[in-house]
Image (cartoon, rainbow over all chains, first blue to last red; front, side, top):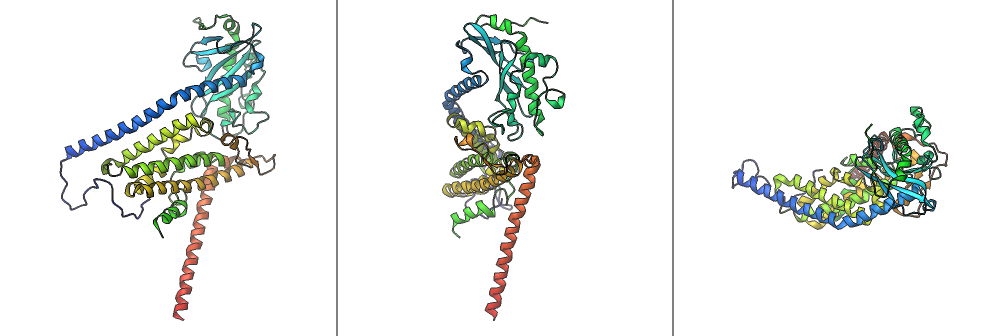
Length: 244
Length: 225
């Protein structure tokens, strides 16, 4: 990487050996160097802060649109007739759901009758970082569908958990869970085949699949067992967990 | 050879960031599993390299020698962050594909190496041109590597193109029932293919040198005769 360039060097190239040490003294040089570094830091931090402020409203809006799109993927709008985003209850921070802070569950109803619950869950045992999930659980305790809302799994390897990256477009990997009830998870079969369960995982990338499978099974059981309480709560309330 | 032609030749071949200098292998090996991933990251790298070289070259009189590396890193990291946020806001679809790769550009030593070796010593125009040429040198290598790995590993080319340009679809090169060759997609496959590409470059260079030597010999003989 040494270019044979003999152009003017940077400011303050150190004196060549043999040359007299340059004035001013060490303290002064250090102070000046620190000041310059500080100024650069301030200028470029300001640049980043400005960009952050300028893009934040757009980012928030697209995050909201993204969420609505995800909800639409797990629960088609034709299946319910209420205002889904207004009819919510808060789920408390729950380790079984992989939730570190309270998160809303959206309640879908048709003609006043409960149809499904749409909520977020997460898995922290993926290959790389947290995997965010959105699930729709039907009123009879079956899983309508699950989608990955965010992940950092290896591109081209573990990222087939997201159907957009899945090579098999006709039957994406993540659709194999659709329609199974929470009794399957209670019976201990909500696992990848490698762990003695029912679900497929692709060779070479079991960790991502196992994380999604286990997390969606646990989340399904947790919500399905509380679904009556969840549907009965007034909108906007928080589900209270009694201490065991 | 004029200066800009030399910069172009350096960037694309002679001092090619990957094949010549073996720099930036971290992101190269991580991202080159498909052609689309590889080329997309390469394009973002060109953008950052051109901008970083331009800014460093413009400010080079203000940067004290002793702290040049921290300042370079500061500038590169700030640029990458700005590109990251800007793409997230205005090119959201593309960002969803590339999002996790963009921060990797900071740790790509090609950017720092060119800023240190070239931009800090040359005027802004030449520096920006050098950054872009080095970036293009990176793109063609990483793109070819990605295409080879994808072809061998999955039997397709440009899978995922629909996420960058909606409406296009991947080219199925090998038959639909091609079972795939997993190791090409896995990190070792990147090393194998890269090794072969470097060997190929060395072979081409050696052959060119040999021809040049023979031409010289012939010229010497004919002048003596």
